[in-house]
Image 1 (cartoon, one colour):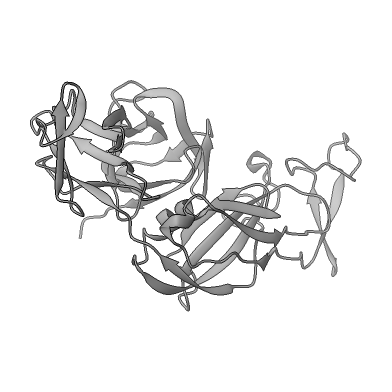
Image 2 (cartoon, rainbow, N blue to C red):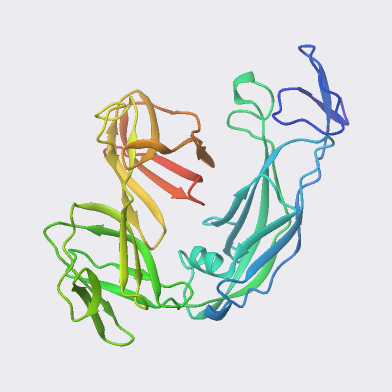
Length: 341
């Protein structure tokens, strides 16, 4: 077959103009050279704090394999000329025609790898992976997925630095930030019952603590109730704060506690926006959970973790596992085995 490749009808979501096929072994035709997705237009990427809530639109065309197929799309950015050796993932989803992200979300994502308060030249690409049922053994499954990548679009991007509150005496250097510069700060913090802390605004040299249950300038230190990672939100306009447990961990038959709690807790790196752990595993399976419960759990493949996804098979060894949570319901992960020299 010189012009077309025959695929078994094992793709998920082959709908639309195709007639449903029920006979096992029936085939469909795929172009020998499917048309890759493309980025048609880019938004203004000279970002500023006063544009934080503005919606930015990347207009694109989807992949065309010669039939109507499901695909997952990844919008990525990297330093120009690096061939995406270390990309930032901006979008992960199943629709590509109009990718929408707010200026503050894009700014926050790109600050993980690029400097604030200056202009960087970045390459952008749209990557499409056709969705194939991995259990069938059909072409496109396993280590060689059907992946198609757009031509690179290059743009100058200005990123703005974020106002912050520093946690003083919390046991480690950490801060929470205000993406919109509106007096509302948020971020992940690691709290310790042995380290009561206060919040310092370095721009105004104001130190916030507690007074009568509310925040107050020069108030008493805040005493954490339990140790661990939290998502903290502070509103200095209303003088309120909230700390919600946000403890990401590994669970599964390959971990020391099996499928039982407590999970093996991961640590957060604010510079990269990722969670990581170095751990000894046995042959078995793992998943990622939040707060030792199943209400939030991610499983699936390294570049496509989804809520309630499949268990991840691992073999025995010592590993460093890094998790990137994309939009609270999807993510990616890497698992690197550590070997003794």
